[in-house]
Length: 308
Ligand SMILES: CC(C)(C)CCc1c(C(=O)O)[nH]c(=O)[nH]c1=O
Image (cartoon, rainbow, N blue to C red; front, side):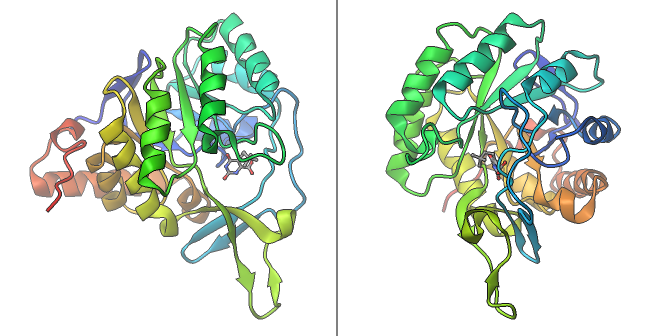
């Protein structure tokens, strides 16, 4: 079966990625990912200018049907990740970056541009631009402003990580912005924002930060993830690839993401539930589905979801 694809000048031998934030914050975790042969690439935890401890714990909670998190961007600081991605790796890397202000984003990306790193970079637009304002990706004019400034100096492969949208007009609006820039990819979705999980027995929330509000992941977000992959594939220039993230627990879910238009597919919550062995299971399940259908390559069905 042919699982190979290219993105931003890099060759990915498998469609599988780790979702940024999951098992990719420390040197040990990143080394673990190198050892997973079914992974096509390695995505770092979103890096900020300074190292961050992140929010108070408990800040992650596992559910039967998914997860909730309010990590607060714990990371070792962009120098650590920029050094890491410039080392020799058997797989392509995607350097995820985040800024708590536009100024931070610009400063960070200027360092990446000035470095010898030739791999992919992904700007996490789920970050608040200004506290008290919606996250950047939910503010279309701010998104345009940020990308205009970034592409005034950044010439390396760059994608953006997007939160989910829930209004068809919002799909039109964000696509109208993104289509004006030479992006290599869009990674959709980030966690579904500000969910709330309640422990009825304790009559209490389950995570400490933000009064228990947090981003949702795992099985419960699959339909939202597929809708965002499909809607953006239908609206974005073919030159902008889609990385599908959200809700993957089986090979059928990977197949569905690709059927909706995804070139690569990230797995997050399920890695926490099952461990890194999940990738071998997903590859086997995806291969079995493809063989049963007579497909030999991901191109045979990518983006070919049928409507009735
Ligand atoms: C939510 C932010 C802290 C603004 C960005 C980092 C992030 C986090 C996090 O570090 O809390 N969790 C997610 O599910 N997605 C993210 O993009």
